[in-house]
Image 1 (cartoon, rainbow, N blue to C red):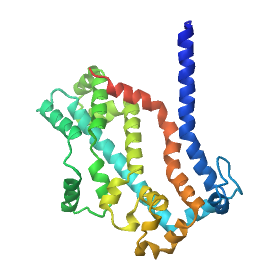
Image 2 (image 1 turned 30 degrees about the horizontal axis):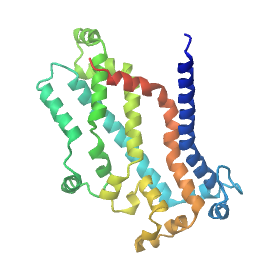
Image 3 (image 1 turned 90 degrees about the vertical axis):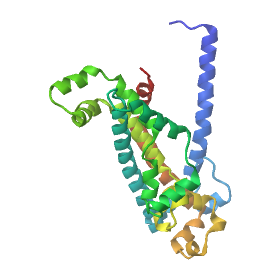
Image 4 (image 1 turned 90 degrees about the horizontal axis):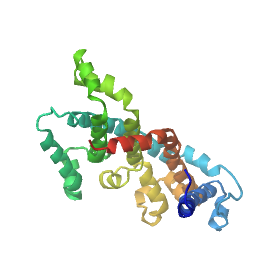
Length: 291
């Protein structure tokens, strides 16, 4: 199809704008990587921009030998795996149930979910709820409150509603009940939405920060994002307990070490994303279609 002159200029403008936006997001990340691979003296002197100076892997060596960092990454991996799997279970089962018109009080349940999507109890009731449940200062305080996400559930519900009803009818005639229909018929053909929701949930739990600050007191349970925040912004507010930790004290004193921690804590999501990206657009698009 031939494009008009105006359309060609519009496409060129869009391409230029996208390149500028991509550069604006990429350059800071390259700067952090370059600092993590440079000597601390060059970083402190402000000599490092986008290319490492006095290249070395000393910071990464220290990071992976640090008990504090390894403890935080174990906590974060556990939160991410457990949170993602449980979120998929909760969202898929609730989305499947609400996609069936035969569900009793379906409209009322749907309105209840939508109400919680727009109105929340607030921070203090949430904090008191976590205390009363007895999960304060445990990792479950970071996992359980985030399991049910109404937006994810709506995507799954809409996706299931797009599937041909003949699939369910055929399975029912063969004697399958709902659990068998969901696990053996629907899930195998729902990779786009499962991958999309899984990626959403994994990013959420990997980057969890505010709930960790509110509900976690023990330093041994700090996830990576709390550790990053302490390394970057809270140097002056290290309490005596933290200052007594020699491992943490050493880490706070080295600028390239902070950059290495940021790179290592960000890289897993960056690596995983390209493998799920092919499902991403399809999952969101199909899940967003309203019948």
